[in-house]
Amino acid sequence: MLALLPASAALRTPQSRIDDAAAIARAVREAGASGDGLLYAPLRRRAWTLPYAGATAGLDDLALARGPAASRTLYGTEVSVGVLRARMLERTRIVVAGDPNDPPEGSADATGHEAVKREVLDAAFEVCRTWHSRGARVTLYARPGHC
Image (cartoon, rainbow, N blue to C red):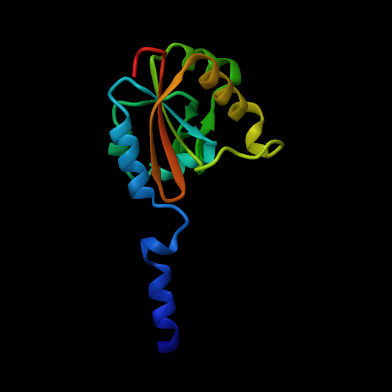
């Protein structure tokens, strides 16, 4: 057991993880202002900020229908694509917490809700600023002229 102690300790450091949830939560907090919309791309990225409730205070999770506790799921459930599109188009600014690179064409993350998120952002918003963190990219989008 003593021989495994150094390896076990190394697995518990932030450097051993593929992403840094604390840094991602800080970036979300810095990117957003009260009343801004918030999206996770893809849905499973919502897990990054769950332990850091203050990071999303004042932001409106546009895709969320029911949270993890209410839906008895790890990530919560999302609204229909029609409701998602309408919610996005009502906003002036949207913070997107997502993968460091867009998913490859044809992946499961390139369809359904994720496709609608990208379509609406590309058509109606512009990139204001991007924060890069280990394993993630947080981007603030705004309507043209509102960065």
